[in-house]
Amino acid sequence: MSQTPFVTDLMAGVVAKNPAEPEFHQAVLEAADSFELALDRRPEYRRAKIVERLIEPERVILFRVPWQNDKGEYQVNRGFRIEMNSAIGPYKGGLRFHPSVNLGILKFLAFEQVLKNSLTTLPMGGGKGGSDFDPKGKSDDEVMRFCQSFMSELARHIGPNTDVPAGDIGVGGREIGFLFGQYKRIRNEFTGVLTGKGVNWGGSLMRPEATGYGAVYFAAEMLKTRNKTLEGLTCLVSGSGNVAQYTIQKLLLFGAKPVTVSDSSGYIFDESGITTEKLAFIMDLKNVRRGRIKEYADKFKGAVFTPIDAKGDHNPLWNHKASCAFPSATQNEINGKDATNLLKNGVFVVSEGANMPTNLDGVHQFLQEKILYGPGKAANAGGVATSGLEMSQNSVRINWTWEEVDAKLHTIMRNIHRNCFETAETYGHKGNYVMGANIAGFVKVADAMLDQGLV
Ligand code: NDP
Image 1: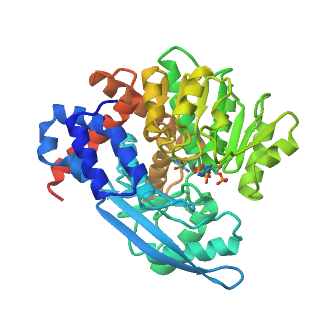
Image 2: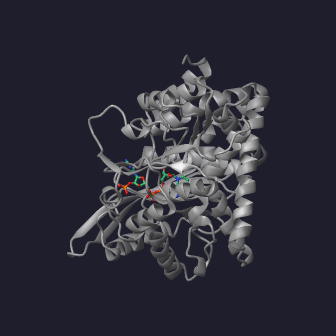
Image 3: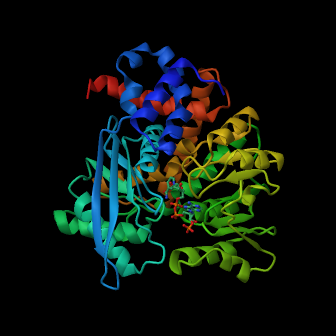
């Protein structure tokens, strides 16, 4: 794709100022042409350097996390919090614990979070954080000691009206519990400083389900524009963590047929379909026993496990006949070749549970073929939206029922879909949810930044 002078200049600056951060460059590039369309209609954004300010974090916190393993050996990890933009509310976004975590990955996630949180219509700014700590293979005690050390530093930077972290890859209910316990101990305060908490100590019902359910609601809304439903459609799902599990659960409730799951060691293809019973096995395997996905194929006849081929140029998970794809593992898990395979196999709905799971080549192919493509910042916004609902419940000290939260989540996802769809149409790109999400998310933040002056 050819670039306009605006995009070329913007990207030259981003690359020069943020070297060795390819994921951050990719996320900005994916949004840059959408921003330009908004700037053309609103010249005051240019004068106020809104885009230039938006891509510069308000604050980056980087710290040492020392901890002791079960053998008594000293360990050192790196901790991060990117406080990206607080124009429309306190910083809000997850913490990721994974060995691949670095500044560039967290900046891409924080940047996308700003636009995503804006789309939810709730008053939340954008942030992201985490560590290169790998919880895999660690005992509960080791994870607890790490979380306590991590929070010992982070506690001074966050608060219910300042910055409210949540979970992400490698940070689930167990980690949020340890982090919350340490925050409370240091500050002597029981507040809604984290979301994804346990339901008996301030958490919201439906928060675990929210991202996966939301991605499926978003797919259903996209299908509605073509008078179709998910009933009977074969779906490819990647990952087997929080987002993948509840994506599969909701797909089953909608009568669809999920046939794949994966983890970082490989993927399962189950042609007969993943059922409720098989999903219960996956949940126990991943959430309780913390085992590898290969065990699924040992347990269920007919299911095939294919190990990851680190040297391969594509992911065979995306090369099966299907109608829908729900990438729910990590960034850049669909490359150009994978996108070609998906299209060749009949996939016409892609709803991204993961953040930026499709690389730019893949995105261009989806847009060119005019399939129903819901980018992560819109399709997976249900998670943070429900975190926003958790914050509201904490503020007024009430608990909504499961049905109430689900109804609110469903409404929010419908509204996000409509907002993206209508914005894309208004800007002359009907059906392009990437443009719609970027512009709709951007304009709200940009207007707030204008109102608040040069800060
Ligand atoms: P989990 O840690 O619960 O699960 C992640 C899954 O993806 C695991 O199956 C993991 O396999 C796999 N995975 C992670 N990294 C890689 C990798 N580099 N290569 C291959 N597989 C990998 O995380 P979540 O389900 O919470 O998050 C999944 C995605 O959804 C992420 O992109 C996250 O940013 C996004 N997201 C999550 C939200 C949430 O509410 N949790 C909200 C919005 C977006 P293994 O177990 O082997 O590591």
